[in-house]
Image (cartoon, rainbow, N blue to C red):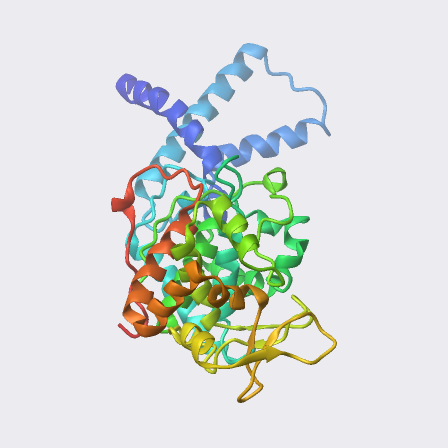
Length: 376
């Protein structure tokens, strides 16, 4: 009996350190009976006459209840088979659960499933706007000040969510909310970039290695407006914006290839129309069309944009046309237009770099994982 009491005495502090971390409703429903009796008697004490028990007896009783409660917690933690505390990635229960590649594959699969089922948006897919979300949450990085980037998911807050370049991205964030509700252990920062990877791969794009490790931050980490590209500008603006992040001319052109996906909206950017005829399929069509089509200014009341002379259904922005006007950019446009595999390889590399800008990963690049597309 004495050795048992000493065992419970040693275990009680460890149990009380662990207890505040456990926040599941199952655990609350199964508090030791002794602890519930203590809470109940404490509440009754305020409505009844003062107890006649001596203080020494009271302290002994409380100590006994404390030891019993600690022992009960220890027993529960070591004998409950159904406990599931998958919160490690978000930091809420750091150290209790470490997600594996299989866990992230499950998140990928859920995003892919929703992309397949929710085909009532734009040209039939939420994929392009998920790529845009991942792009814009990462493209705020400033290499000089080491601020911004995908680490933080600060677009959850105003003023960053209200920046003009982020107009319409609430649609993408809302699309991912059910995924986060199903996997609450993943940070929004990891979820948004993983969603971008999922969308690219599910739209027949290249394989994008990805690694977790981003943390969510509060409103104080929001970045200033003006860090993302303005489609109305030209090559000097592109070099300034992307150069701030650490990208060279080749990487700027490769990233611009994401315009193979999606379209512009007048109620967001003010521009209107898709860049390609297949805006839900990743390809090198954007570069081929830049070179092969004849482009004229669109006659309308909106901002300056270009329209293809043939079908009059496609558009290009001034920043797009800058890629063929500038000879240092154009040579890469020609390379990518001629070989989609070269484009896919270099696009994949630069997307990995973009999504990791400014993230203080604990490990090295060996932590990157390749998650399987749904059609693999």
